Image (cartoon, rainbow, N blue to C red; front, side, top):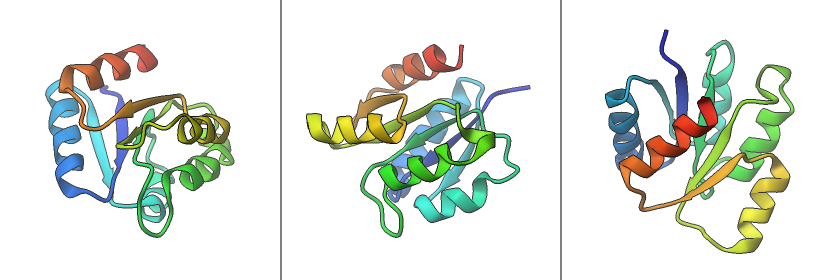
Length: 121
């Protein structure tokens, strides 16, 4: 059974690129267009990992991570921020919210796969 990864980004082109990269490597991908959409899709999804953008409408990435970490089922899953932001204070806020790691966009597909393989084992 392949590992299931949720990608949460308000950019359809980013979601498409992430999905293509991960599915090509044998992962199953669930897409969400913002934080609220992700929370709705998460329940019962059996997701093993999340890739989350920081700046999104309705519910931003930091707030999403806090809500996900409050759910027993997802308290310890890897959550990687995938964002254009690279400031130290933003990274610190992500870490405090419970982010496992941080990838700055634009990213190379091999870089994404390397991180995914590292955190999923």
